[in-house]
Amino acid sequence: MTANASGKAAVKAALRAQRIETPSWAYGNSGTRFKVFAQEGVPRNPYEKIDDAALVHQLTGVAPSIALHIPWDKVDDYADLAAYARDKGISIGAINPNVFQEDDYKLGSVCNPDPAVRAKALDHLLECVDIMDATGSTILSLWFADGLNYPGQDSLRARQDRLAEALAATYQRLGDGQRMLLEYKLFEPAFYATDIPDWGTSYAHCVELGDKAQVLVDTGHHAPGTNIEFIVAFLLRQGKLGGFHFNSRFYADDDLMVGAADPFQLFRIMHEIVQAGALDASANVAFMLDQCHNIEPKVPAMIRSVMNVQEATAKALLVDSDALAKAQANGDVLEANAILMDAYNTDVRPLLAEVREEMGIDPDPLAAYRRSGHAERVREERKGGQAAGWGA
Ligand code: AOS
Ligand code: ZN
Ligand code: ZN
Ligand code: ZN
Image 1 (cartoon, helix red, strand yellow):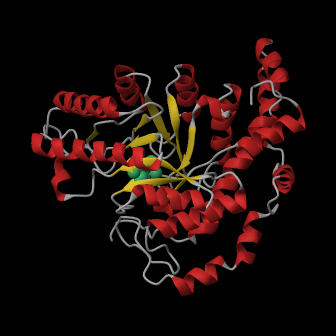
Image 2 (cartoon, protein in one colour; image 1 turned 90 degrees about the vertical axis):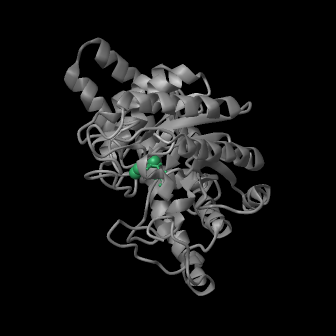
């Protein structure tokens, strides 16, 4: 899809081709540090998470891969897990190493002052590349909880050197067709300084590393009021936008359903994507969800999230790019803004229903889910579902 794609057929083709990855951890029980509310029918192992992700794909037609978190999704045979996913009609997406949940990581993982802890963290990152090889995954998705709670606790500069060293060693291990995406986050769990706090830090490390390293934008990881679409536009221009972790936030890293808190922001982000021609698979931007459904039922919440991304995308595709370019060139502020708002204010639900019918799926994925009997079935079948990883 390019900025100039016009006509309903082109818009529909772009919507049919869209790909949104769902995360394994969103199918498990999750919560806050105050309480994890266990739900009935939650997957008991990675295979059952794949079952749920496959159902989301079956009902939406645009969610053909699942991200894994290691060791939350640890299995004996990763090739077997990938084969199972293939049988279910999906594939293994990004591999997310976990270097934040063990006691050893109290003072950080790859930035830890203790070389032995750094070596352990690096080993895990490399193990995750092995898992990419075994599963056919092309993305190593890196997020580090590393940071400081108190000024003076450690050297900010030395920690950057340690980070660079671990990233370089991991980068060396990547094979052809594999890349690493480096996620940034303003704060949490560290409260004073985070070692990769913003896109600029991530970007600088990625530039130093090379073409296989790109920035991952998690929409919940910025200071309130940050213009995320600007970051997206800038990174796209540099060829350094590797992908997204989509979710919504009202305050911090809330991990609510994407498009729930601020559908207009999601539209503005997708507008930059569409204008840059980056919706097309050839642009290699990974559209991934990173959410935790703490109080809402998980599979329908995931379906709703996928639909929200589709709606924002459809609106972005409906922007009259030629008219917009003309208004911008003329310095017609009001007209340019009106063109954007016209697209945003369009009800695209009928269009998406048509697209789904043409794809041979139910025009109303949530109604189809309710009819499927899945919730009732897994409530009986699965007793004692797995926590996503927190408070387990
Ligand atoms: C953490 O805040 C990041 O968003 C990571 O992507 C994290 O690995 C993911 O949320 C699962 O814990
Ligand atoms: Zn994330
Ligand atoms: Zn996060
Ligand atoms: Zn988040």
